Amino acid sequence: MRRLIAVLVASLLALVVSTGVAAAHAKLESMTPVDGSSMAAPPTKVVLTFNEPIGSNGTQVQVKAPSGTNVASGDVQVVDNTVTQPVGAMIEAGKYEVDARVVSADGHPITVVGSFTVTHAGHPAVQPVGSSATPPKDNSNTVTIVAMCLVMLVVVALAVVIVRRRPASQ
Image (cartoon, rainbow, N blue to C red; front, side):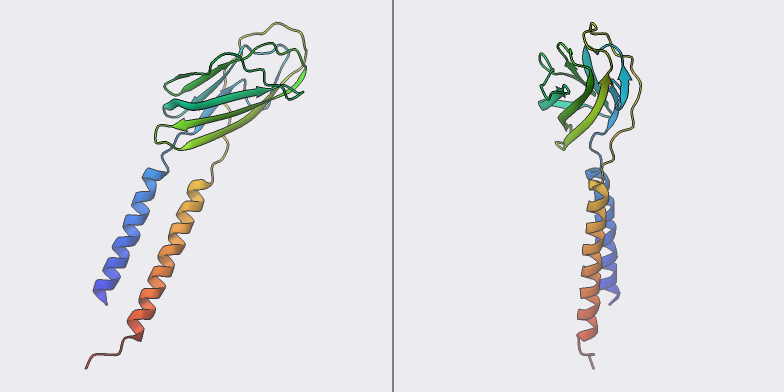
């Protein structure tokens, strides 16, 4: 019985320790223009900054005008933890949506969604002023940890049932 409990405790410990590595994918630290901000003149680019380097393969950024057209122009540039997407003519006033998909160094795909508002159409593009935004919450790690704990509880319960069903040795 003691041996079984020791194995179960060691398994649970290994499961909890191994989840730290899986939770290490990149997270958005800031977006320029800041998510939810409002500006009179449109920016010339959208910059996403992450807490760790991002892979350049598979990185896509779209900047959608209020009418739904993509105003991103040119190739997305990835340098270490910074993703820069130049934007073209932003002639519409209104809310612009930023939709990005990047792949972190550990291969985990990350989706970023944000928006900013341009209040006056027809102004020349300006360089956005940088400041940090609150990153979107990622609940995938919490769900994974809870699921693993539930699986371990089921394994422990089954082990207890099996041990108690055994006939006592005489």
